Length: 154
Image (cartoon, rainbow, N blue to C red; front, side):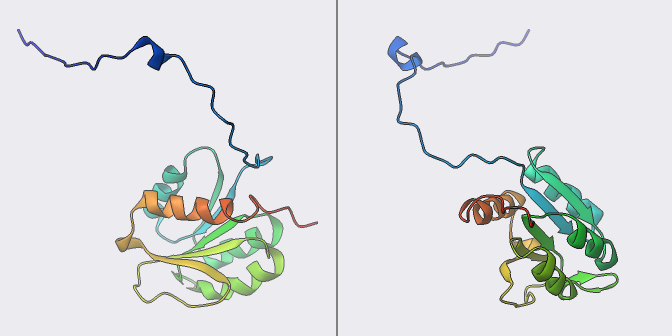
């Protein structure tokens, strides 16, 4: 027979009654955050997608050739890119993002410690030096600290 002992804190009844708090004024999102992740490592893309959870629209493209039509035909709030892809360098996508998705935040996620530098890239992170929850938090902060998910291009 196994015996477990638990120590439970005593809670006053008043602590269980919710206090009336001042409501935080926050802009409600009328649509889900949309992220395009251009990444040739399927496992890493799956981990990033899981980190964001089911509350966003997340699409994975494994190459420049797969990403280009997605950039041209869909709306994205954030474009996550691995700079080194099987069919070239993802910097080739920056012009397409600027033309078709000017509202999108471009974030570099690379295995290289010296990432590609460009004014259109708002944040660069090295995969091996940052945890998934930090990536998720940084990306969400980029969108939250702007005006929310960007308006769709008309």
